[in-house]
Length: 355
Image 1 (cartoon, rainbow, N blue to C red):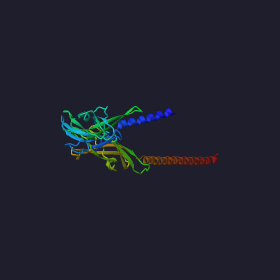
Image 2: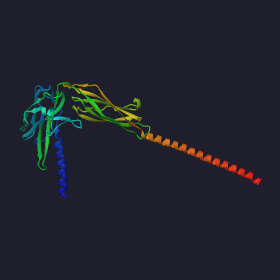
Image 3: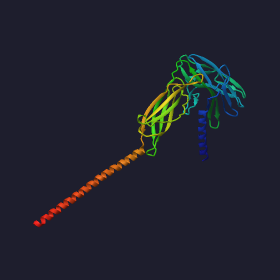
Image 4: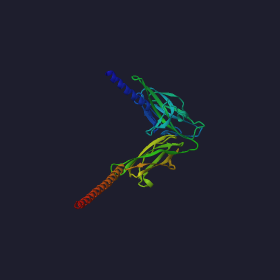
């Protein structure tokens, strides 16, 4: 029993460590972040130079074939020397709406290839800060638009008891806008609406409008969202109210949206309308609203309890009509029978004297 319990505990611990290895990465919104505690702890920040003293991240506008030189400051806040790997990686938006970076074993195609640190690793003594120069070299055939990635420091630690390596990563975001024609664009894909009525046959229900936002352009975009549903001919319109903006989506990325709409009056036919107003942020940080994008889809909004009530009432009326007809037919048959009997009695009475 003890061996089995130990084996289960080992499996649980292994799973936890594997998750830590997969997600132990920080890409700070500010230009300073810390990783680790105790003996192994370090911080990263942007270097102070002509680009600024307290930058939140690295952001550059570079033409195809252009180059930029900068540096990252790494400080050992622990009590033992640190040997850190240094590398760049492409970024992507997670399903939680956060920026993450590819792990070292995944292939980068943009920022992770164009950013080159002057070393692949660095050894830092306790209390020491080291500046790591790097260069951004954009190829001459790079497609214009926005690219996001990060410059990372990484410490791999092994769990001797379990034989598992945990990769702790700490880095700073790198945003590139490659010069050329910018073509912002968002599309609404897979729009559909589902209706859920109430038990009250004369009450309103709720609709759920679902769709996917697809960044079809070459620049990062967020958007203002508006969703509504209406009945036939645009009657009985109900709006969803304020909807949280999606994260900044990189070119080619998709974001799934599900919006509840309350107080929907059933009208058999239901039309859902989703409107996106793309928000473009320029190099100075200001945001501009672009031409809205709209999509519609049709669905059903049936008040099933009301329909059931109508069916029951209709059946009751039909049953009443049928029953009334049967009663009339039976009364007629009885009346006909009485008439025949009366005629027969009369005929019998006339025949008796003659005989």
